[in-house]
Image (cartoon, rainbow, N blue to C red; front, side, top):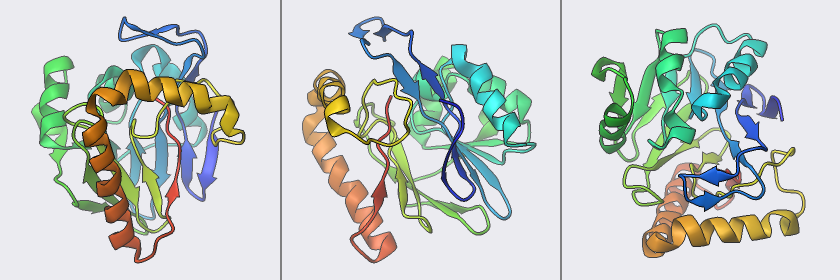
Length: 230
């Protein structure tokens, strides 16, 4: 897919994985999958939202280098699963000044799974925010959507919700945004059944938590939601 520009100074820098056919050693991937990572350049600081599965690390760093990313101040980790956080050990070596922003539960799980030292973390709670200068990232905790530590990030000025796996599907698409709902309907339905359905009550509550956060933050009902695949 390569780099995709969402808005000024906001870029998709993740990786397309057409060849992957199994997830978590259990879930078939007939359509491959996509690892979403986003670079946000503020007037004072730069943030990376999520990373990629370790085999795709070079794709992520190639994209970052193409955007002349010499420094990353914050790496936001929404979720401890490897397709979101697996490249963290290499990223913090490449960008040693960076801090990993996540919640306490996610921090604990990442430290159990990966060699990331305690000092690299900046722990946030629900509704906490950090400034990038002219951009503000607000954090929304959405536990059990679909792991106990998941969270989302709301970019207040642009009204963009980076929703982790909330509206996800395993679908290796060349386009970042949905143009034909019929193309992704089966993948999204399958993803919900296999991943979210066991926690459907909490997922429903999570939907309203995210909605109310964006509603109260923006002061209006319109909010841009970008469909994020796993």
